[in-house]
Length: 446
Image 1 (cartoon, rainbow, N blue to C red):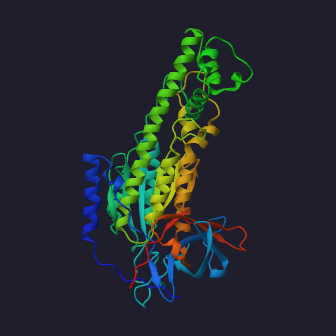
Image 2 (image 1 turned 180 degrees about the vertical axis):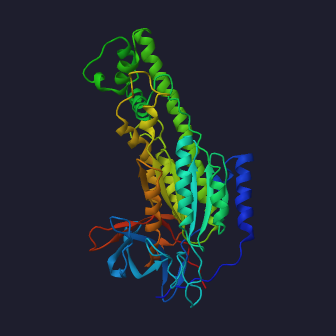
Image 3 (image 1 turned 90 degrees about the horizontal axis):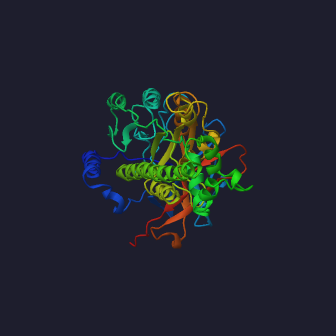
């Protein structure tokens, strides 16, 4: 089956929708929470109705793998296998080279005319979680972002979004304007860790321990430490922070209260970040076809233990579903600056540096890993540098994709989100990137 895309008409309403929505945020909160999402899984009417499912298949270096056929793919919807009728390889650019001039454009839309591609490019939005980024972080990602824009093709649209507040621009062909506006992006993360220099993982673990055993602080404060208590996070912080000048019960209770307060603060920050992303994803529903959202963040703290704070699992699941409904793939570029900040002269207590930042990385990446993977994207950790390598990988992976024609059953056609799984058979060393949910509109009669 040959794909073709009809050039869309001008969209004067898009800017108004974008600007109006942003104004609504500023004046009335997240008003789009109840707005239904536009379905982004259009169907192609042939002898049977097919559902369009876009998939990226890459090797270990992020290079797309061409020359796959329908029999190489296995697709399940709602846990049941569905027949893959067609598999079209849609290439926008060479992975590390110039644009491809022939063939259809990557829009994840079934053809409406018998002609070939019309030069419509991809859509990228660069989003910045300013509350997590320091000033130094933001300077670094601004430089790498501008380099990213320079490597886009003329037909590609690019937009800018910051949250909770900051500069924003609708996705546009005017790359120079977006590139200039990105220079105004400034991180606003506070660099003071608090009285007891609690790390994110310590906040999560102490809240978890208190939820399980509310008498732990009292026992530790009285000096009654048994074998199990000795390995708790609260005990480790007590040993590090209680210097003998403050009575042990007071110091221990104060540490617990600080963990509770910081847990609430981190939960608020995480909610703020997730709300910002969810609102942006909903805005992107006005653009047809595939969208790629590249998010920059130093991490969003979330508990990986029952009862721990912040508890953000439901928010991550909701964001993944919203991304699936609007055909938005999220790449989360995470700058690992936690250890550098904790060990800086401005934030550490002399001779007492908080330990075990490996666990901090876990609790700050978990949420981002979940919602990016659910959308068909990925988490891109940045340990050193400004993220140039991660952005190169994003461009490489999004240079092409497969558009699968999948035959649904009538029971699938109820407009509800259903589990979607795509596998590639008999291809060793490959990674498949696909959203985890699909919504199939009710079949029209006549």
